[in-house]
Image (cartoon, rainbow, N blue to C red; front, side):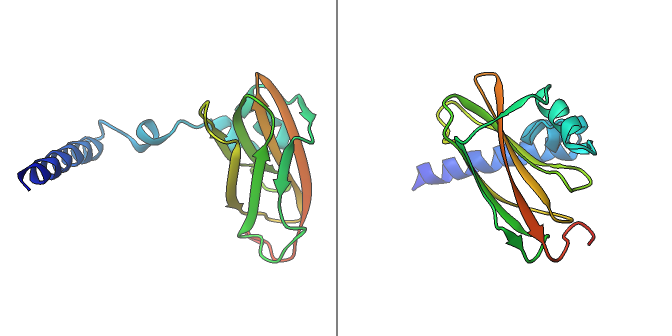
Length: 156
């Protein structure tokens, strides 16, 4: 019983120190949680977003990327997207929506033993292509699917 109390006290102390560091501005959530490419996420076009995110726009079409998205999204505010890569050596996966004001919706860096699978929901302002881009062994691969939006989610 005494051991559990010590573990709880140590955990509480560590959480308090981290909380104080964040409060004092010594640690910022961006530095602690994730790095992101401001240029890629603020890009207004798909090519600019890919260039900012991957450093290139040269992505080969691949049937080894499975993109699951609805044919018709009744509400563009919550469109379910699932991407699975069967390409060996997949290290990065990104989702772009060509018709959005800022096309890059999300990007993921995968660990070596991580299954190349992501499932999320994105906002779509209008009918457009959803593009999945995968980086594997230093090369870019992509696939896309058109999703028709009946009620806009990005201000529509």
